[in-house]
Image (cartoon, rainbow, N blue to C red; front, side, top):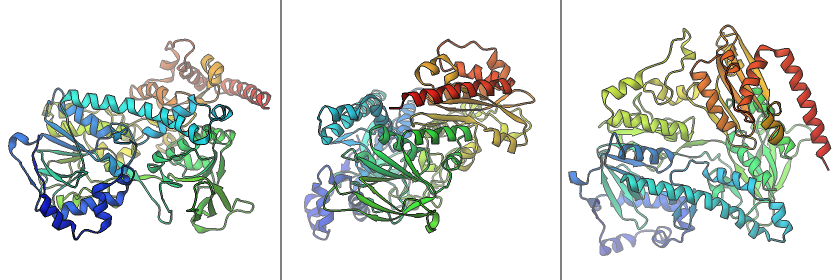
Length: 604
């Protein structure tokens, strides 16, 4: 273990005389207070002031081969990979879970190894298994109902956290809790780690991988308080089930939480700046029919959508949590609202889910010579190496910017390890390409795990063949590859084949709402993209991804055999529809009429 020489008690006492009371209270924080970001900021400031007094051993025997900052999915998986065969390196993993308070249960960090959306996934699954209406019908108080919900979420998250810690211990990864940053001296062969007690430990490391993730973007003018007004991280700490909630945003996170709270019985209002909810969803990559299906489901669920609107003023009662928040609405960019549109909302809680940005502010990157973009995203070369002069600092995941997905970040982390430790043979394999198309935009290479320009965040986000995207709403949505519009913009003559969930036996019996679409090149029949909305869409998409990457054709799909009573049968139905558009349209129309009749008859 690396030794640390801590400031002596007498020296610290003298120094603390000049420290404001707000900082002094940091030493004896309660668990709840410890989440406050200003306390962490003060700790970082103290580290900088005391850095000349805080020294540690830096002998070679204590030096790590790799120090990783951040214990999210990228950091944890990178640590496990680096500590295991074929690398077998000495690795430490540094994390400060209390700095964000993302998902804490007392002193237990429930978020370790989990994606940003771990809480929402747990809450989503809980909303499927718990009937709030039934609990209320049993006479349970509101606090007891919410405790039952949160208890289930904690159980799910605890199981994941326990297993992650077990894996790290088994792999021999050293866990260090505290805020990591580079020293003011400008060197990158060591890191300062500020602990809870304000002691500072120096961690010598040959290489550093920054995987500190992202944090919610907080627009100005919103009075975030973590009690009534939340962002997409602080919502994890909500202590009650709101009877009503307003959510600003039209992206994946906003839609996920809208459905979650609606399934839990809350009245939900979704506030979007775009006049068309469908257009807002297509901007994040969804196919127009998938987007339409999601919007229709939101409406059928009873979620109210305020279009072309934004919140201009917040009136938050401070004396009680029971009095409603008053939200005054205005049109997009401060314009007047449309005639007859709602001008004011009264809700129990408000959530701003309007995007994320790299979490790099406390790392002292400037002193380390590490360049960032205007949003704080770390700039890297094709090997994921930063601009640090020593050439030993790498980055992966959300700290690079879009697409802010755990899956892409984990793959980047693995590729970074190849750049750091891999042999030339491994690098040559990763550099290989499967491209054989004349149109390089249709190049389906080895994916994100290949080296080269695909690691550039902008290129990665713009390449539909890099990774699958999933929306964990209810129903789920997912896509991979090109939409018909994208294919046509590339000068291709493209067609579509669509299957409704109700056209296959499993969908008809268990979950009839949803669709699967195959986009294909008409001249060759090659499958170019797959788009799904419905149950298990985020699972089903991976078979579609393999169809695209393997250059399978519509006829290949038709000639394949699928297990009966599975959702995968829709792939064949969609492929057949591609060759018989008229007949397929008639069949879908008949199924749609049946479903509409069934919905009408089930209404009370």
